[in-house]
Image (cartoon, rainbow, N blue to C red; front, side, top):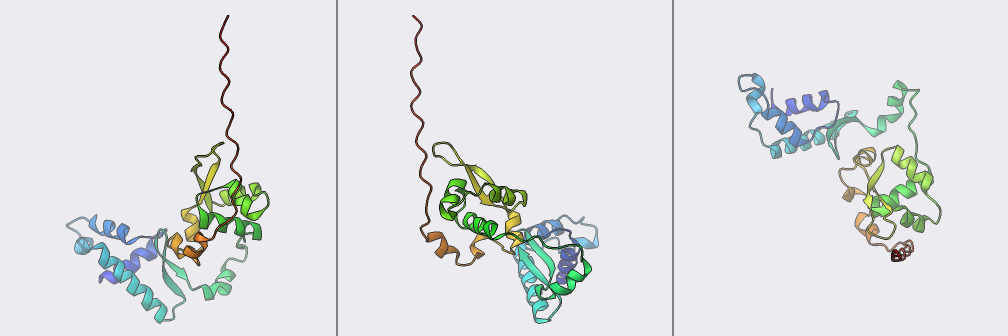
Length: 204
């Protein structure tokens, strides 16, 4: 078999996206005395180039599926235009849509991460406790640590699943990324520093 055919077979058979590095490592792990070792010395760059070539061939061929590169690797997916027919296979499955407030909150986090809840509320003008918890439950955001300000509030950032959910390879692929990151947004007022601890009373 040609390497291109092998790559197609691996991506098709995998239950998760495969990166070029993972495929390269997989081919190198083939036992030397087997047919699978024929491509054990192939370079990662060659694999990446062939995957791009396959992607273009599928698009130019007008197929009902595509080879898409996502944040975690390459995966075969159906053409988005075929969605109405693919849904007929799963009539009981209905995609869960994010509400307007959830999308607004998620966008603020995505463009300004890591960010505190107070800063999100300063931009939106309303409390976001419930929305943030919903995004956490959906694994679209995660806790990134604590801010180095009084009170040490939690910081939030997007997850790998966020990239996969929206079909992004990285955060730089978000629309108007650089421009929106530069726009000045309202900030929460800094919480007052805690008063210095009173000196301990000495025993008489």
